[in-house]
Structure formats: structure tokens, C-alpha cells
Length: 157
Image (cartoon, rainbow, N blue to C red):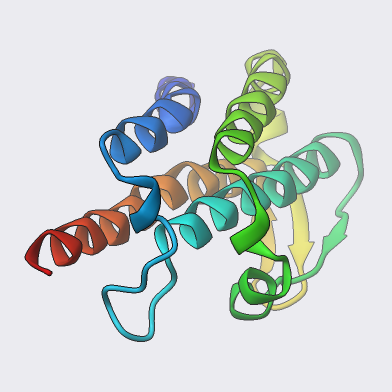
């Protein structure tokens, strides 16, 4: 369970990673598109918040239900369709923090059997609780790399 404990610890650090990455970014830069064909910084943060909600639902269902089915969500449809430009960044950051704080005691209460339980993803097939936790945990650094590139591009403008 050491690997899982480490994963849970990394999951708990996600909100602070996001907050740290956004320090010093001017409000005027949040909605700019310095790299063609990519999302704005605000859209990235909204996507992270939306994804955390989806992943918490999936993880809870895998813990409590037998082989639940969960459906794919296309971020390229959700991000432009969920009015990111109208969403306050502080609310999105608080949401990520709250959702993870809510989920942490549940994860810490699980044993190895729980982490081996599966749900069925509509396109990716069987996924264990451990796999879901890995995906949501790695999701933050994956997208923060894009934020760093956007910040660098903005600095060059």
C-alpha cells in the first residue's frame, strides 16, 4: 500500500500545485490565447475543476458499487460549452481544493481490495480505483505544463 499512500499524498498536493502555478499571473492574461489552438489559462483551470468532480464521482462509485459504468467526457466539447470565460478563478481553485479535501478521508479509509475494484469506462474499459486515482493525480501536472508554456509565451509578447 506504500505506492498508494504516496499517490494519495500527491493527490492531496494537487490544489497547491495549481495555486502555485498561477501566482503572479495577471488577470488580463487569464483569457488570452498566446498559443494558437490551445485553451486559455482560465479554461485549463476550469477543466481541472470540472475533471475533479467527474473523477470523484467515478472513484466513489468504484468504491461503493459493483462494476459501475462511467461515460467518457470530451473536454474539447465541455471546455467551450461550460462558459469558462464567466467563471471566477478563485471559485474554481476553491472547488478543486474542496473536492480533494472531501475525497481524502474516503481514500485514506480504503484498503488494497478497494484500490483493486473496477468500474467500466465506456471507451477505455475496466479501470481500477488505483488507476482512476493515478489519472486524476497526474492530470494536474499534465495541464500545468501547458500553463507554464502559456506564461512563457505571454512573457515573450
